[in-house]
Length: 505
Image 1 (cartoon, rainbow, N blue to C red):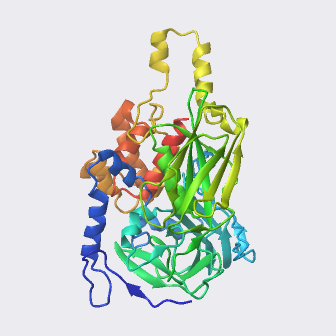
Image 2: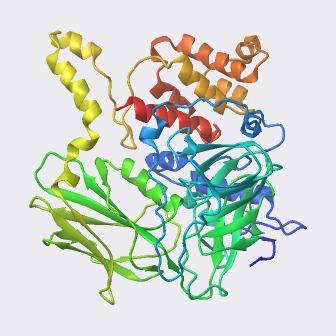
Image 3: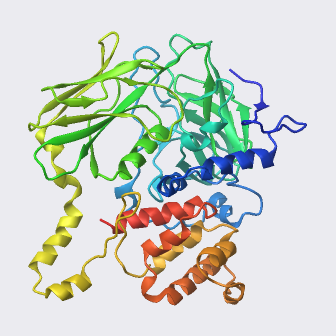
């Protein structure tokens, strides 16, 4: 089904002669949304939502040259796979619409560059399916593609006139002349309303939200012909409340007491939803570990329907009911389940009205052991206990931790390595000089003195100059705090955030 191309305004944004939203007005609205919070902590969390560049492939952007060069070697943290974002899609198993991923495509596994930034090296013309995200890429020749999952809470304000998000939104970096089409996974069940839905894609170009037509859709994907690359994701209009393929995610609070406390989230089976939940859990003041249980819902999730969590044995569960909606919100709703007695616990999610079971899982003793995420830290503590050094020496040598507003701890106070600086340099775009002056306290004269024929090496030498001048304060945590700014490329922030997470373990 092909929708007519259109564009729409946000709030009172004016349209130009072509029906596009005025760039100035839309950008003002976007900036207002980013900066409108009165809470510093809330703003910092929004900044870290990895929105991706809204102009990922503008001509002349030096940072994008490598993205389209298949021979360009991209640095990667060797531990990135161990700390990848919890956004892997679950294979749909809906008996009504038979929504399964098309196995006719070549399945390829991406390389993880950071927490949720992925890269594919496609060797020839063809159509390929990412085994992690479900994205399907059609390419005309050998190419390198980098992509990351974004948050609808960042772009949901652009959804007007009954449009709703239908699947995850991504930032994709590639040569658009080589990438012919992209198929985005969606979460709707089309068993009863195949002819009643209208799919399109929301494409944010130069801070302007555009609705662009799709080529086709199936029970699992929405196909879009690439026009240019910047944040883009599938959206839908339906004459009635839609039914979605859903997942249930369970997290256990890490604590020393004998009781057990859990968070149970209900979400659509898409990366953006799951990523937002994962981030919310990480940023909690309490520490949680994910319980690995089959997340797929046995029944479809219906918009505005209420769901209830029950348990055997009976525990303290709040709220009593939770309404499932497709509203774009930053803070995700969840059930909190508390048990005084030890496991096992059987959790069941049911429809509040009909009492039909949507999902069920048994949490056993092995699932609830807190030590599964504490191993790296305990090894450090073990070394400290076995050391014969004095308390004063131990205090000087031990890892320095500092509580951060988002619940993440600062990494070891050692200088950033050459390899880490190179990873950051490769993510720097054409704004690297401004970044150096604004945030790294370098001067224009410093930048002019940094000479090298290779642009990436110039960026590396700039960062090395900062490191040498910072002396003992040139660690990953310090660099991450300096460059955690809205006008710093998201790739830079992704890499630094991942380094910080890896070093803090």
